[in-house]
Structures are given as structure tokens and as C-alpha cells.
Image (spheres, rainbow, N blue to C red):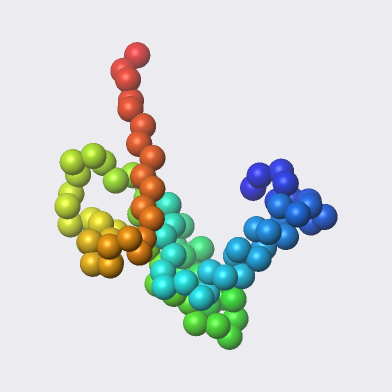
Length: 100
């Protein structure tokens, strides 16, 4: 967790909290992880443990990486292809591994 979010007296903390409160109202949540890495956390979110008494939107795990030229059947990429044009922002940060 970044330092400004650990201090509950900062405006950064409260702005982050307000943003998080909007997550249950989303059509979906894209998370940079994969099911087998964090199964308990993903289950807690999808089961509504984090926000009781509110329906949770679908969780789309897109991690750890989507390789360039990789598998076109990737779950996230299929979902993105089905969305209306201009309705989703998809950011994919890539790294290059240079052998030493």
C-alpha cells in the first residue's frame, strides 16, 4: 500500500476510499492477478464478503501478463472484444526481458 493511503487524515486516503465505494456499482472489475495466485481474495470479493448486502459485479482477472502475440482466446481479451466501442479503457504495460 502506498504511504498516503496509510494515513487516514490525508485527502488521498479519503479520495481512494470514495473511489472504492463505487466499485460495487461497476459493470465489471478488471484485476491484475490470476485465480490460482489469490483464490481467497477473489472468492471474498465475488462472494460479497468485502461489501455485504450489495451485489458485486463480475471480476475479470487479467494477470499476470498478456504476452504480445499471445493466445487470442484469453478470457479478458474475449470480454473486451464484446464491449461497445469506446466503453472500456484497457491498459497493458509490457516489459522487455533482456538476457544478461
